[in-house]
Image (tube, rainbow, N blue to C red; front, side, top):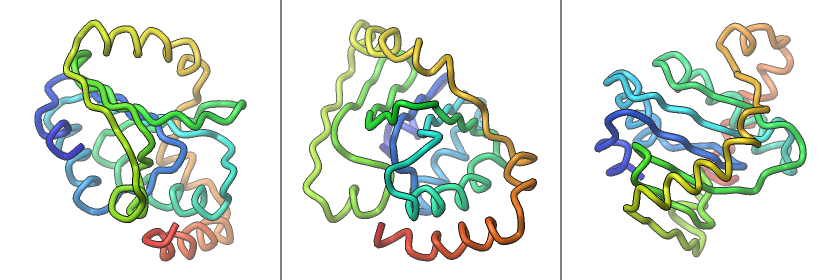
Length: 161
């Protein structure tokens, strides 16, 4: 993931039901965005794991402030795990963007450098992604103090989620 983000030139699409990247991945996402790469992160608007959703929401400003775009997909809940880079490289598999999934769990991903496959995956996902709504820093700032506090406390548990 880090290598793909560091090599990205034009576009990165990430789809994950759980988004709790560690500091290295957050830095790589932000550096890609600062280089002019369009970084789009798609997450479900409603999650099956509330604590993970709250922790994820608390982390979103870390990527939004540097130019990454975050989108929430409406129901039904997508459990899809896909990463596309520059319409040529694709990674599909079982890994979420969280520490447990990337370091502890026995996950399986397949990386393919094939523009035809990446294009086919992109075309398959595009109708569902077109219904997503964008998350902005302004929307996150409008959350109540108690919701921000809840999300921040949940973020402390991110290494265990």
